[in-house]
Image (cartoon, rainbow, N blue to C red):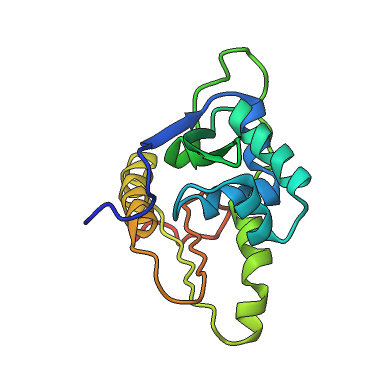
Length: 187
């Protein structure tokens, strides 16, 4: 598949290894900023216009993301003697590292992509435009891990799709252990 978005170089994946990084992506406005930058690099002014928030508010959140290694300046241009900075993501996909933080700090446990997806999808559900599945399967941890790698490839494909159309679609996917009941082994 062609690498369409975004219009700057970035790593494919970045492990979030510190609590500060996880907290940085846990804020809804910062998540929105990161999502917008999947399309192209943008200035704080452009981001503020897109999210309809004050430039100072957006600048603060961009700074938090930059300090935590999630955003970087990908290019600059002079506009009336002022250097305008274009920000881009440092990776297409961020994930919380499974290993403990190098500082020994405990990672936040309150970051939940599905909570965000549930909030975002409520209106689509009400309009009859929410497509979704939930399935349960008794599989080994190794099978779950292998399946997760395939899921990550699908997420990467979604991230790289050419940007077109007028509607922004969300895509939520995951795999997790549950207490869902299971039949006993067959006799």
